[in-house]
Image 1: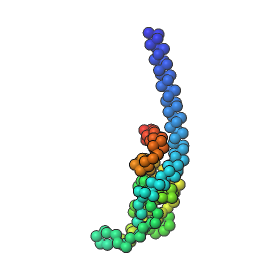
Image 2: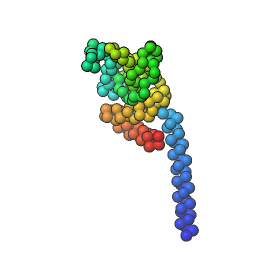
Image 3: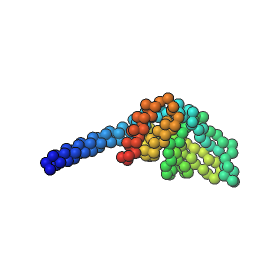
Image 4: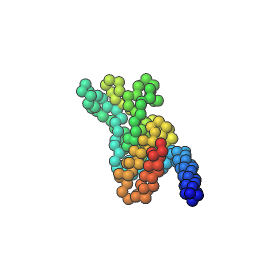
Length: 175
């Protein structure tokens, strides 16, 4: 019975050590999440240039809800997340925001794409945000969506994808 008890005590001590290490690593990932997102965005620039969309900047809307005379942003972007819209646009407080998205541009910059609609004209504003602000407003979903975009389109970078998969899996398992 002594050997069983000693083995059990060793096992319990090992579990406690692993839990302490897990908490330390988890905190390290969370404190560096903005750095991780910034590095991922720099790595994702080629992906955005390939799969990104030219997002609507402004357009008129007819009575059926169809957009005509559209104007698009010149740079491509990928949508990473959506949030409840802020009350008013920073560039024009008289305009109410109807839809708000987190996007990554082909330059590797994060923006909040804010759409307004006045009954006839749909227009938008690109509000630049840093990675930390993007994570605070949109959560870890944007990290995951950026990872998925990279996973699906970066064919020659298996080592980077595997490392990011482990980190993202770890973050989402603990979040």
